[in-house]
Structures are given as C-alpha cells and as structure tokens.
Image (cartoon, rainbow, N blue to C red; front, side):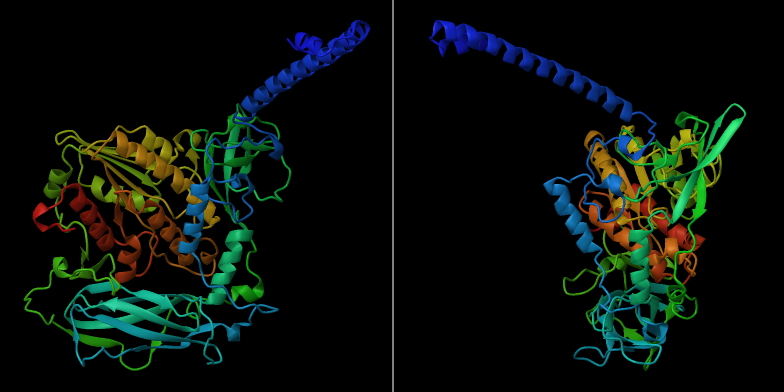
Length: 585
C-alpha cells in the first residue's frame, strides 16, 4: 500500500527506480521497528504478569494496584501515591478538612515545658443562662475554658485536645459535650440539658497543643513505629522477618516479599528470608515498637497526672440544678428531646445507667436469653474487626448455647450456632495491620473480600469495628482500607436489599507515655472522623462508642466494661428487631 501511494508521487522513470529502492529500504526499517515494538510489548506483558505474583525482590518490581486509592498521599507511604481521579481528589480534600487540626505558631525552637498547656493552672467557668436565672431541661449549658501554661500565663493559641462531659452520679446520667476551639487559648464546652436534677461539668485536657504537634510528627515521619513479623518455614528450615504496610521513600533497598491483596490493592510487605522463598510464609504476628520516638523534651509532654488526661479545675461552681421543661410535660422521654439546628445534639445520653439515643430507633432492653434469642431467630450475623468487635461476639455467644466453635478465643475465627432457632453468628478479625498473637496467614482475610462473598438480604446482619490497629499509621492507610470496604458495602446492599449494616466507632482508651505514641485518643479521634465522614448517607447504623465511653463514669479502656457493652448490644439488637411503636425519624 505504501509503495503504490509513493509511486503516484514519482513520474520520472530512472529516478523512480532509485527512489523505489530507497523506499523499500525505509519500509523494511519500519517493519523491523514494528516487529521490535511488538516484541517489547509482549515482554512488558510477561513482566507485568510476573510482578502481579506474590513475590518481588526489590522496590522497582512492586506491582501497581489495580484500583487507585481515593486520596493523594501526604506522607512517606510511597506505594499509595497513585494519582487520584477528580472525584477521589475532591473526597480527599474533604476528609483532610474534616480532620484538620490547628497548628502551633511558628517559632525557632520547640516551646519549653513551662510554656506549654498546664491543666492545673487552667480554669473553666459555667456561664450564666441566657435571659433567665434558672436552668430547664431542653436548655443548652455553656462553659468557658481558659488555658494557661505552667507559669500561669494565659495561652494565646489553640490546638489543645480537650474533652467534656456532663454527668450526675446519683441519677446514673451522663452526656458528652462539644468543645469549640476559639484559637486564642480559650474554648467553649457545650452541653444539652437532658435530665432534671443535678448536673456536673467535667472538662479534661487529653493532650496539650504541643503534645498534639508531636503526635502529628510521629504519624507522618515514623509511620512504621509499630511493626509486625511473619514466620517462614519449609521442612526443618525456618526464618522470621519484619513486615510493614507502609514503605517510606527512603526505605532500605532490601529484597521484599509483596503480599498486596490483588482484589483490593491493600499493601503488605515482609522482608524476604535469606534462605526461603516468599511462598513459605505461614503466619502473622505482632513484632514490636520502634524506640526511641520522643526526644527528652517531647517526653515531658506525655506525663500522667501532669499533662496527660488531667481534669481542669473550675472557677466557681461546677454543677447546676436542672428544672423540668417549661412546657407541660410530665415525663422525660428520650423521644421528646428533639434536635434543634442552633444547638449541639449528641447521639445520645445515659439516664439511670441506660443509653438513650436522641434519634433513630428506640432502645429496648434485652436482659435474658429468651429475649435475645427471639430477636435473633432466623438471622445470620457476620462480625468483622478487632477485639472491640470480638467483645460483642463474646457477649452474644453466651446466649447461643448449642454450638460454639473457635480456633483461638483471641484470634478466631469464631462461630456460634443455635440450631433450634436458626441463628448463625460468626466473627473474623480484619486483615493486617493487626497487633495480634500469631495467626495463620490462611486466616488473614480482608473485610472487603469477605463482604463480596456474602449474598445479603433481610435476614443478614453485618457488623464491623475497624480502628484500633490503624492508629499508628498515616491517615491514608486507614482511608484506603475504608474506601474498599465502603465499595464492598455498596455492592452488598445492591445485591442484597434489606441487609442491615452496623458500624461501631472508635472509643476512648487508657493512656500513658508509652501507649500515647501509637494509641493516643487523638489518633482515634482522627480515625473516627474519617469513618463517620466516609460512611455518612450510606444507610448504615452507627453505634457511637466514642460518646458512649466519654459520657460513662467508667475509666477509659480500649475494651469498655460490661455495662457499656450491654448498652451497645441492646442498641444493635434494637435495630435488628426494632419496637415500631417507639421508633422515630
């Protein structure tokens, strides 16, 4: 074809022969180039297929993930740095805005301890009620907090991590407050008045603004301060190597085994054993913690009873007496408390030790085996997550006596069956990263993968709690995981209409200088905000463990005590089998 076209352009006979000869040579070169290009394309495909295997020997051979993460990388997790789509970039900016935290003012060197926030010198005051001398149920209480440093000087910038609650030990009542940072060293704590009688304000400084800045640095610069290990074994030969999910740009160029999940693109890497191949990996376990992480000066910012979870003193009275509502209402019911646009409305509150949500389904009390069994009859309950979800399984499985199967009580998988009432309940831990006793790699399942294997439907309940093992990693590691789970939930709800999905939020934990490095409540707060933002409007039920642990009188613990667990389980069972007469929008 090319010769014929070219001949039409040449009319001279002798010149025609010369040009034809030269042209045929050029065509031969073109064909040779095309042949080489095809060969290179074939070799590239072969290499791509090889890179998608479970093994790799260097950073250059890492496979690209099939699905791009929904965010732009902001830390050293270079393998998550694929360019996002326009919608994903927009969501990323929205999530970053949701968790934005005030920055410290610029200074040449970190502030010495005596210039940092001191909860003992700081004070809060209950502000008088607006336009009246009395407090009534339905009003909003406000307390003003002024932070000072250890010299007693007022702070002039914000960023302290404060939490607040209003409670009444006599009435077994409590509600979480909302703290507003005015960015000038002062804060407002807002509380809805939901019960009559005594109400006492408690405000706690979890971290100073200077301590939060250290935690931010650790999260961004030391993403692998919690690391893991795997055992490789073949015959009598065995080796143990370190494993991590996040590969910083400056990570040592060592041979690695790539265990990235091909279905979701969830990354996971282990150092390659010296004598064994990557396919001889048999388990996963907690490895340890990097040390040291704090400088000596930074360590001073994380001292229990000094500046870590310390209650702030009050100037004046710390409690008020709340009178009944002004309108003619003789009984305080949770259903009568309506959200108002200009007031802070929490998810719920305790009264007489019982959790009362302020919207959604009315909570029923499931106090015996018969009521729980009746509610769960004909149901299949799938539970996924960390040990805070396993708590729910353990509570409910005590009421399902027929059959209880487990490989390991702490690791799982766990299963409980009631043949008579056709109840099946199972629990499985989420995939890595997970700080856990040694677990077989065959039992490491990603939640998104598991959800894609469910049929769903009106008799299916899916419950998950995934947060505690992600607190030490950059926020994009958690966002990436939640994005895939969200997509799997959308697919599940499409093919199985009527599936009930319940998500448990993060909760407060006990903290000291050591645990703050990787499990601070501030890390949990950031994760909790991402979780709520990403699943908002999806038609799922949230169990607000954050507020349920903050509002309760029990000391903070990563595994909340039985009274809180019972209230949580009563809440989820009330959604499984709601009392239609007492539910509201």
